[in-house]
Amino acid sequence: MLLPYHALVGGSTQGIGRAVAEALAEAGATVTLLSRNEAALREVAAALPTPTHQQHDYLVADFSQPSQVADAVAGYLAAHPTGFQILVNNTGGPPAGPLLAATPADFERAFGQHLLCNHLLAQALVPGMTQAGYGRIINVISTSVKIPLPGLGVSNTIRGAVASWAKTLANEVASQGITVNNVLPGATETQRHESLLANKVSATGQSRQQVEDAMLKQIPAHRFGQASELAAAVVFLASPAASYITGVSLPVDGGRTGSL
Image 1 (spheres, helix red, strand yellow):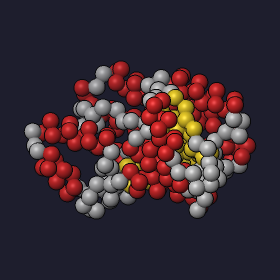
Image 2: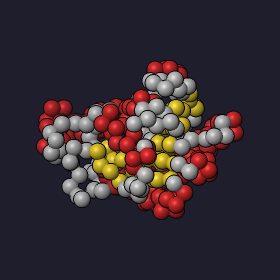
Image 3: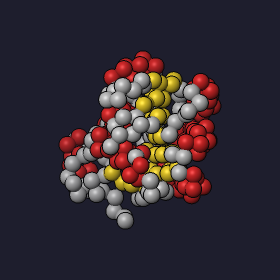
Image 4: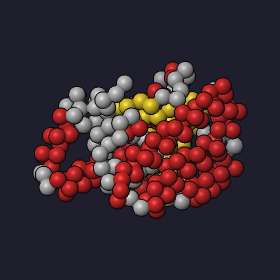
């Protein structure tokens, strides 16, 4: 399944974002990475697969500054009028913590990094997708949009807002050949996963093994996920084969989410 399209992938120097960029490139897409660390961007872009002799590149922007993200993409589109046919919205999750401990600034920061950046990118890219008659917007969020996760107050709140935004947008652009879907990672072995594990160890006083065992008991597959498994779902949703799937939130979580 070749994807002869141009993809913009956020948060793509590590973890799920990098795995998604690699999988899309392997499927034939030309990938533009988007993140704040130029040295890491340069390294990852140079290492991406090129089975169809693609020329990958990158954009430098900090998701904590939505206007910076918008400006970077606007400048790129001015020089590359064919635009992008695939947008993968992905950036690091808000810090863990109970809801009542969160400050207004915590919510504002997370809202900007996630919902506002997603929205600005969609506004910039949808016109080109409409002109091309093909568009895929895929948001990497969290299973918390199905069932809120303990100890992730700000994340639960903002992820839910992003899911609602995505469903609304999906309905607005479906007639233009554009789909909008969410993939919901479960416990996936990434730096974010390591951070959440460390927080649980610190909060509970348990050993890492005890914390991991408790988490694994909640996963019917009895293992943690790999970023490549989440990336495979993104590649499918980005493909023509998924043209009649839009407005869905797909858990990739080994069966952990206890809802339909």
